[in-house]
Every structure is written in structure tokens, then in C-alpha cells.
Length: 256
Image 1 (cartoon, rainbow, N blue to C red):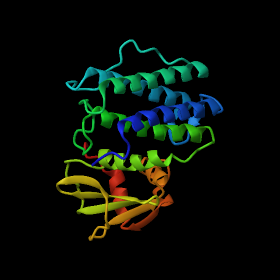
Image 2: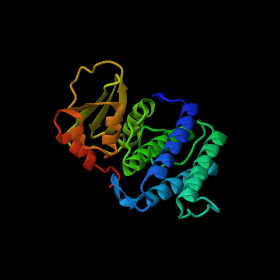
Image 3: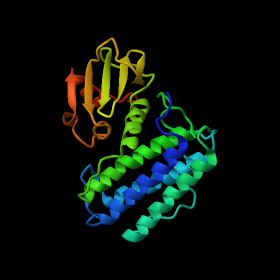
Image 4: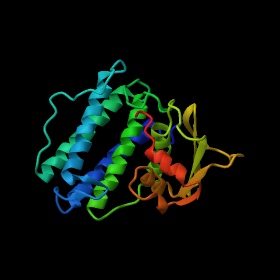
């Protein structure tokens, strides 16, 4: 399956969403406020998480296709305490990630944790994963600043697809009855997630399926994305069929 965004788009949007993240942090009441969508974290924790993670991925990309584990960044500066300095530290982490991705290009192999999924182990796939992690945490920061914004359509549409391919596909057997979950974005794109004893697969639907899904969810791409990441309740979507399937998907951890 082809990405909905090319590599240049992914890098552009990583930069744009990272800037939106920093703007939300700058507008928040303070760094010590709790993040409502990640209540175990303060806003400072969220900034540190995103910055340290981007530096770790930059180091992993730079380690090359033969790396067998996530790399630890070398000589990384400690995150400062004061907001303006912390935002500069965050921006520098984004630059490190983007520089590493540009240097590697989309087709070079890269270690990643999603080896049992349909998502390839390439730097292009890492860029795609990075975009959507940053986009969701940008929403978290905006909620904390009491100014949530819709996820941009081009990000949300690609994000739903990337989530399904990376988090909802595996070679591990589905422990329940065979099932299919459909996701319909009101922007005109749909996906199906198949689940069976052979594992789980996902694909974009280009035509109506003859077989009805066990359950389906409909909303804007942004709503679907935020629901998949647990940022808004599933009940916010239009749900049809056997709702228990979505509960089973939430509870399923193939690596457990």
C-alpha cells in the first residue's frame, strides 16, 4: 500500500506539527499543568518526552540498517527547566530528527519496534510514525492550553491509515472469533481491519466490500484518529454493528 503522503510531505508536516506543538506549549498557563489527555504527565513531561524521543529516533536512523535496537543519543543536552529554553531545546530535537531523515532518505532500512506489522522497516516508515506521534502530542499540548484544534485533514487521513497498519496488524493470532472492523472517514476514505487465527491485516477500501463488517466506525478523519489514540471516546463516533469488537481491540495486546 502506498502512503497518502510522500517523504517530502512527511518532513514538511513533521516540521509544521512540531512548530504547532511549541506554540501550544508557549500559550499554556505553565509547564507544571497536567495534560488532560495524558494525566500522568505535566506539560514539561510532555515536552521532554517528545524531545528525548526525537533525539533517540535520530540516533537510531543514523545507526543504519544493521542496528538491532533503538539507539541512545550521544552527548544529548539535558532538557532545561525554563520555558523559553525548553522550547529551543525541543526545536533542536526536531532539527536533529529531520536532518537524520534527510540524510538517510525514505528507502534505507531502519530498526523499529513494529516488525510483526504491515509497516515496513524503513526510514520512510519511521518518518510517517514520527509525524503522527508528534501530531497527536500537538493535540495534547493544545488541549492543555485550552485551545484544541482539529488535526489537519492531510495529517489525519494518513494518520488513520498508519495507525491501522502499524498498531492493528500482526502475525499473532487474534484470540476471538474472526471479525472485521471498518473505519469510514467522512472525507471519503475507508479502511478495513481483518482479524483471524492467522493474525490481523488492514487495507484501504477502494470499493464497497461484499461482506459486511462485524462493526464499523464513522467520523471525520480527525475524529477517527483521536479515537484510535484514546484522546476522545469511541462513542463520539457513529458506531454500527457489534460494539464489543472495538472493546476487544482496545484490550488486545498481541505481544503479551
